Image (cartoon, rainbow, N blue to C red; front, side, top):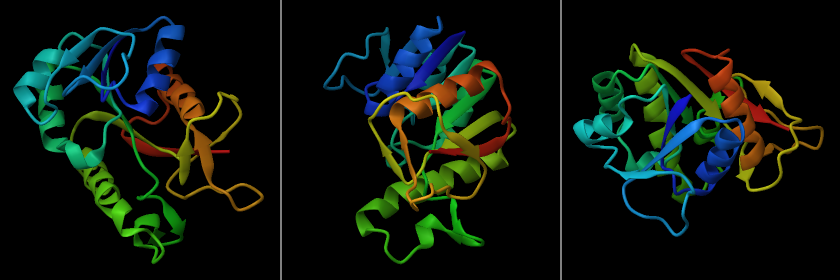
Length: 200
């Protein structure tokens, strides 16, 4: 497939690019400016909050994957660009903030969440709400609470709206395994217009 990747110079995006190219997909990176590292794929500079510019950058692609900080992007502009460009699917690397830590209690609402994390979590919450209100073919993949570089084990659990923990009470996943799960979903969709989650 031809896949546009928004936020292509980020750390999680690097793993997505590696997984996509390994499987033979053609990737176009989209970023607002050059990052510290070369993503290793063609890079187009476009402001994600300028719907017309983003539409021009993603036109002709089979899917858009969003792997960018929610505090810096506007869901309405991205969804508008998707429609303008005629790109049929959008897949989003989400966050854990909108998952349920307990029935009826979101992670974002827990009292021990550091204040510095809240703007990004609220951005993810707003982005997910915008997807749900849209008519787009969307998928939102929420990682575990601890989401860090690691290795691709290929062994993980997929879930829904609840934060998953292992036998030791830990909630974690590597960038590499999330990338594998995201590209699996791209190739064989099982969560159209749904959020799903991942953890060890």
